[in-house]
Length: 306
Image (cartoon, rainbow, N blue to C red; front, side, top):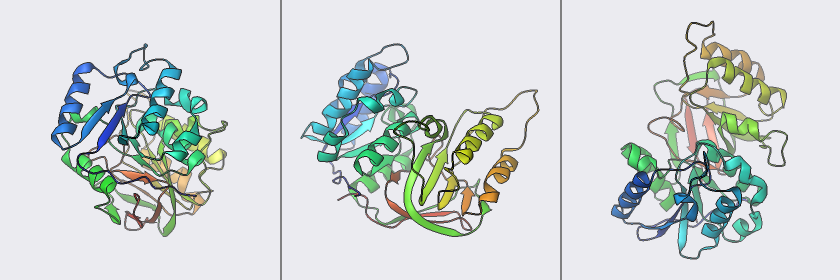
């Protein structure tokens, strides 16, 4: 059963946690200042101020912080500070029944993909693949935050997103289904685990950054061999930002994508502003959506908050 979290309004408390990598105190203070200026109150999790190498504290501490925010009655939404690495280490340490009993808006992307997949598939809660709190201090992108706020408040329901300037059709056609997906590296990391992504009859969206073309090839091929691509009803590749393979032979990304996805004969397009790009539109994982690969359109058919 799909569970929709309650809407977020001005004056509500946003809980901020860091389930993956740490963030500087300066960026945390700036993010809190901006959120407060927008009319919200903030509750800072313990993990937000911890640093353990490339992790924001130990695994048990970060998992407990996440659970605490779901249980805290005053907190109406949970924003992750940043990605990096570490979310995958928490998946078998979370009490998902607590999340099911106290559903809330949960926002993040990149490494947070692992938590999106695990939380939705374990509880049915709609979660939000969208901008993170530390980005408020990094870059001023009003469209990303206005879209997040509108979707979380229920002011933009239903809504329609159009492909960006990089859009092109891979396989024409339209499809409907529940939305799932996120960062390609993290999606692949769930394979073979109890939290393996379920793509059957779903609309799968994929985003990635700072990888070379052959690495995208390898990960998409892994998903194809695992049956995750052909099980989907439709596939959307967002606007990838890749690392150049200097002085070494490569292939055009577009050619690799066509080689791997065209034979599937399911609707598919490239070029949507979600993930590591600007703007970074908010996509509700677990919501019912419709895609038109011929026009490069993703339509969210229902309200995703209650």
